Amino acid sequence: MTSKCLLVPFVLAALTLSTTFSLQPDQQQKVLLVSFDGFRWDYLYKVPTPHFHYVMKHGVHVKQVTNIFITKTYPNHYTLVTGLFAESHGIVANDMFDPILNKSFSLDHMNIYDSDFWEEATPIWITNQRAGHASGAAMWPGADVRIHKSFPTHYMPYNESVSFEDRVAKIIEWFTSKEPINLGLLYWEDPDDMGHHLGPESPLMGPVISDIDNKLGYLIQRLKKAKLWNNLNLIITSDHGMTQCSEERVIELDQYLDKDHYTLIDQSPVAAILPKEGKFDEVYEALAHAHPNLTVYKKEEIPGRWHYRYNSRIQPIIAVADKGWYILQNKSEDFMLGNHGYDNALAEMHPIFLAQGPAFRKNFTKEAMNSTDLYPLLCHLLNITTMPHNGSFRNVQDLLSSVTPSQIPYTQSTTLLLGSVRPEEYEQEEAYPYFIGVALGSIIVLVFSVIFIKHLIRSQIPALQDMQAEISQPLLQA
Ligand SMILES: [Zn+2]
Image (cartoon, rainbow, N blue to C red; front, side, top):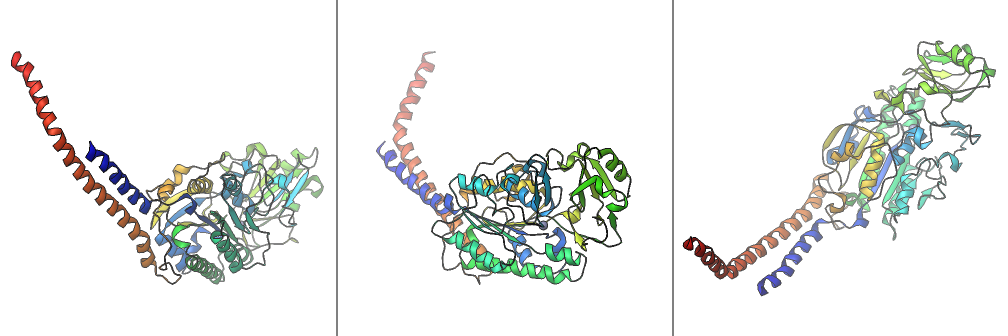
């Protein structure tokens, strides 16, 4: 018994040693979510994008991400941080009218700061903060709006003239401060801006995509310099893709509708139409068969797969243009060579999705996911409880390495983690301490187990002999 009592602390010590090497403290859980607005899934292959491919090689890549309808910026960015369809999170378009609040929301006029529009959902930064963590957002759409009386712990008021480098500097500062954030959100306006301007099929988009790749390279370099690269989970995604438009493919509403009969709330490629009182049937009939490339729905007939019906901000009639077609009230209005907002089943509307970090598998490609699945994945990584959402963690669980977040290999910051370290080198850094720790721990446990069993057998031998004698006696009697 004495030997048993002595061995228990040794075994416990050995187990502790092995866990010290293999477990990562909770405060080490870090996630940086990056959105390059309008980065279509196949831009990765249009021109060489070495930094994107570098992340793919050392992390995961999802080939097809189905975003939400309508495939616009604000609805999709809010989905990424809530896991909800537009009808549920309430940001149903970039331009909206709420008949109950009797208020408008418009990107063009920047009157997007009305909290009422955002409070049908709770974005992840708030849930993260309620769990006692800190969040930081660099220009993420909606992150400078007061929602449920809160802002992110740190945020930059939206200003498109702030450079990418300055946004990255803020993110790094927040991750490395005395009270560091565990969730960072970083947003950049391109390639959306240039995609609208040039059209995605323009050869001039090549340099635009190369520039984004360089920006990603800059971010990776800064993360390495700040010694964040090895213990931070970096997720790179986007809100939507882009399709080529043409002045030959314009649908002019003035040709079919009397201007005085309706208000045009949102324009192209999903026209949100609010008929004037008593004019619903007239407007609907006039538009229903107006153009072969325009599909017109009464609100209650909007296809269920779009999850775009049950919200008062969705107007009584919506008219959806076919891919590459443009809706204008008349040709005097602005026209863009590239646009998005179309059916989310169209490949051209799909964004990218890559991720790299201790929680993710390496060099792993997955066929498909939904953008609503990102939210439960983020909550899992941050160890926070999800709010009700439309995503599925099961759908994306296979992106993670077999270890759970609380068991992510822990790598202490060392001088090896420099910005100039080559990929193979820091992959080894990540792997060696972990495996050496596990191996050492296992060997110690094994050695002590053998000694313990030996002692046990020796101490039990006389008792066993007695037992055998007792068993044999009744047999002899019978
Ligand atoms: Zn966008």
